[in-house]
Length: 120
Image (cartoon, rainbow, N blue to C red; front, side, top):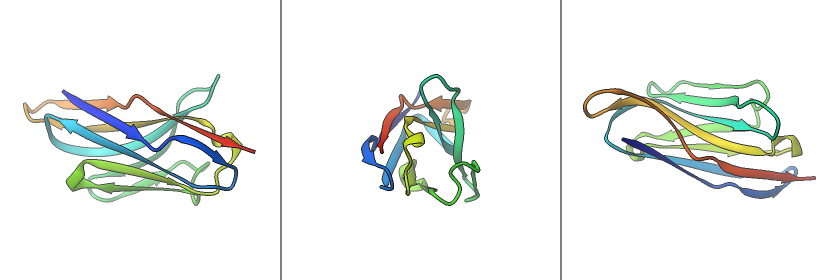
């Protein structure tokens, strides 16, 4: 079993910054990728950014240049630094991790989500 714990959400003014964290714990052998998604009210969950075990990153065009994903492999933790936030960034932000447990079996888990609200 693998658990993902997110933190860092909250209220921020437009133009401000916020950093989200997500730590994976449990019976983990390896993590291939860790990423961030968000879901605004009435909208589908959308991809934001991903970091792979090889060190490569990929971003959605909507956040490229404003958001930066980084990863601490030793801590099984991924971060999302969000700058120049806009009211339309208001959403619940979710962490996702894919990898293998110690059995080994593949896993794909989601965090519980953390709310980010950007006020105008």
